[in-house]
Length: 215
Image (cartoon, rainbow, N blue to C red; front, top):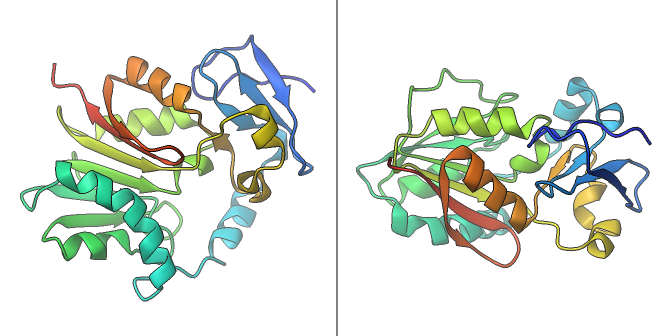
């Protein structure tokens, strides 16, 4: 398998294949520990959007609401009604913004496939639930998100993190053909160091809360 440049840190060396039970090929970057799907194994954009459209999530789905609360509950202490946020990658059934509205907090819905609104110059906070794993070019998307945040702005992310090569091999997250980027906790530490962010919180599996540096 020919290695590709890491789409997060740009390293061309130290890219090693990592095995998965599914019939797609992945590489792991020893520099930032991002696992990425080879570009030649990605779905086309048309097929990706068709797959996304099969998701039927809404505010009326108690299970989906409970899932989003895994991100909303830990991030709420850093939010206030004076803030205006963005749900980045809200999908075809925006729900996070409605949950925030119940807290008196305004939040715009954005999704490149389903809600391609014109974005404001900046947002006080950005939440990205089950979004980062879909990034083809995580470095570009991360810089875009950082540019949308003011100093002190909050970035809340929910994406399942890989733990070990053994766990990755049979991981349910690889079964979704639209998942292209897989983050380790070490990957988020690297992101903080290179994108001017501070890690405020992380749980054991999927949530990280970052803050843009004030200096």
